[in-house]
Amino acid sequence: MEDRNVIIRKVKKRRVHESHGGSWKVAYADFVTAMMAFFLLLWLITMVSPEKRLSVSEYFKNFNIIREQTAGSKGLMDKQQALIGEQKGAIRTGMQEQTGKSKQDIAGKLKHAVDEKLHNYKDQIYIDIVDGGVRIQVVDTEGSTMFPLGSAEPTDKAKQIIGIIAENTRDLPNKVAIEGHTDAAPFRGSQTTNWELSTSRASAARREMEKNGTDPMRIARVVGYADQELYNHDNPRDPKNRRISITVITNPGQPLPPGVITPQAPAPAPSSRP
Image (cartoon, one colour):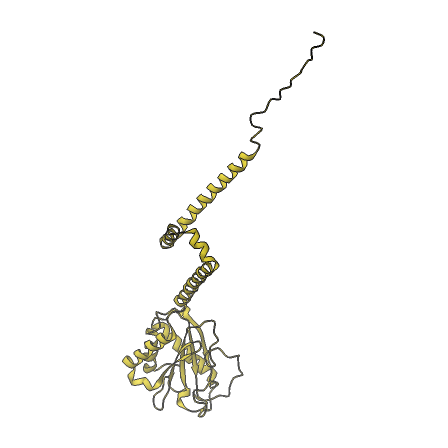
């Protein structure tokens, strides 16, 4: 009995969850993240128009990972270029809606109206396309004036012409610039100069435009140039220098040519006859 060896066996009990550690937490976090991404995708889909949603559906329906990988970066660049092209087209469309019809369309409509309703005054109406828009100039001729001499009250003829211009431009969103001009013929015995007279005539044209449906908010500027922007520089007394100029502005960000934008407050000219 005394020679018998005593063997002591220690048994270490293993805890039930010790083998799992914290790995289940990582899996659960991945699952929650995937679900959040899924619901975010569903929400985004509801915000997309039906047409784009259909294109996305068709894309994934025919998706082939091997084909997509083979296409490589070139295919991705092509899609990006197409998307950029669509965005540029949308921007151009939006700008066209804000600035109205093209200069050619506006000029063509006005020329047609002149031919149809103002053919007796065709030699007194000049329509041309300038950098900033479409300019309509209504000029005097020998024996046919838009305003009585020295007066800012338009004749019936002038009212008819301005009314037709307003009628054919009142539906446009474009801004309008109105100018008054005189010739350089001097006259004596009056306190009124060409500056006051040209400005008053421009204001009279503005009132006629508004009477015939032009929104006052579309009037960008009303200015008188006296005899500083002559139509005929070779003959300062040419009746055509006495004129009203109405410009439909199609390029708001582009400077208008001389004779359209407001001048830098020049010194008053000597008294002269219109």
